[in-house]
Length: 217
Ligand code: E4P
Image (cartoon, rainbow, N blue to C red):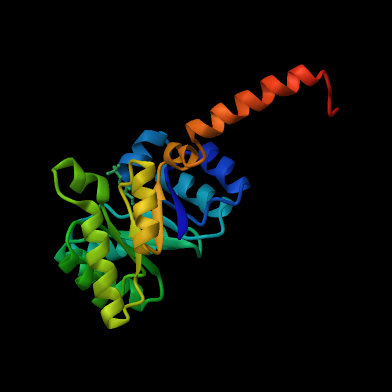
């Protein structure tokens, strides 16, 4: 499963990228707001920093305007994926931009039927939002499962990019189901390394080591 980082924070991306943990980056208007940066500038910096796809989201609502914004974002760098909302106009824009050869990430997906439409419109990525479904007591993971079945049934090449990931268990479940990609905030990715038994074991080893009176360096 590929790891995308869901942030526009350059320092956080760089830290994970240096560890080889970053296969791509996703941003959205809320994350651009949080970064306090200009969308074109920060997106360019991110796209230079990482090798994989960097999603940059349009804000227009009508297809022609989405296409114009998408072309402007895609011109930033060859690894930009234009992020479009899963609306009828978003699907129209997806068809045109993917036909132009741009990567398209269709976002704000909350049903398997929406995901089916995005694949038919040529999306490179579909972004089902797990956490936001869980927030309203629906099962986000069931959606990932359904999309996996449907895409495999018909051989769609659109990659399932599990989004709105809030917990380490979301990551585990996505990997079990076979999501192609998951995008998570840097804090969630770093938490994957934590286990209380690792901490407890390390504490015991260090205590015993002190008793040996030895030094390695
Ligand atoms: C990613 O593409 C989405 O924009 C993001 O994962 C949304 O996450 P949230 O629901 O935690 O805001």
